[in-house]
Image (cartoon, rainbow, N blue to C red; front, side, top):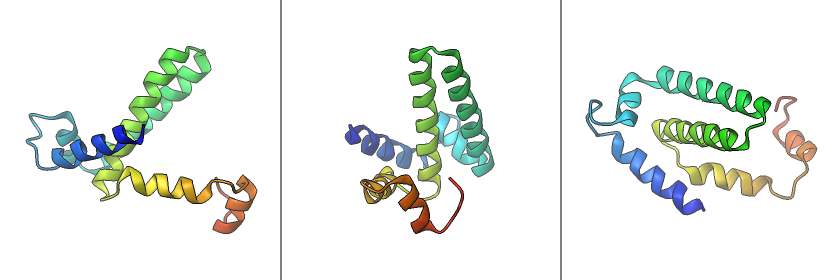
Length: 108
């Protein structure tokens, strides 16, 4: 399934040079990071509402929206899905407590 992430990353990269009037993503890029972050916040809230409502289809739909907009953010920042996948792979097999201790933080 990571193929779809790579395909989306390629499309999102191409949208950086697209006319904002012709592409939703190009429009987000043209508005800057604050617009992208606002959209991620909105989508995260919709995920929470869907989860609380118990509708699995809606939860999947809203999670897809959140992931998509997170991919837009990554692309905007010059990152790719593989950067996140490599980090997840690095953490695989570590307990959450071990991973947190390695970061030296008390946050999530």
